Amino acid sequence: MATMKRSVAVAWAFAVGSVVAGESVTIELQAVPEPILQAATRAMPNARFHSANTEQEAAGLVYEIQGKTADGRALEVDVLESGQVEEIEVEFTRDLVPGAVLKAVEHQYPGFKIEFIEASHSASKKVIQYEFVGTMGGKQLDLEVSADGRRIVEADD
Image (cartoon, rainbow, N blue to C red; front, side):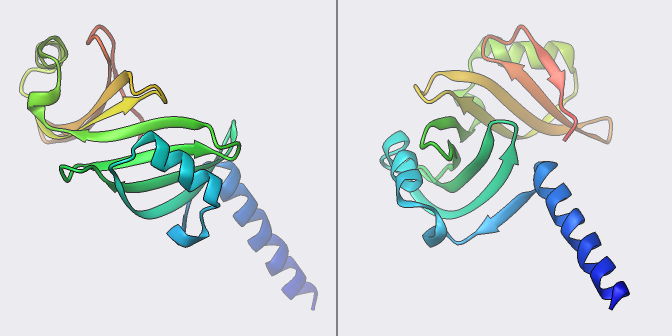
């Protein structure tokens, strides 16, 4: 019995630790509270949402609602428990990225081969930053680039 209690306690501690650490938990789209889904729909009215997950962050529980734009690009709308849109992430193609941003990446990371680009927007749909995923010299890189291209940081994840 003591072993079982200890196992349950360890499992509970692991589960709580995972949530606190920002682990993503997949949920059914139908399980998303209606006000949260409405906020995502207001933010991206032409999107087709197909999946969701939650993540515990410093600001509280965040619902990450995934879908596609009207033109088929991947998107995610992050909504706080309060119903406030925290961030909108939209897949971008190279031609949608400002020239100054591309030039900055190419200058600072010559030979970087872009595999994926995502633009992070505020709730007002202003681009906050770009994320470039790709390879350089056989190494996988995840670059976070400011909207004007002046700041480039290699992301940890």
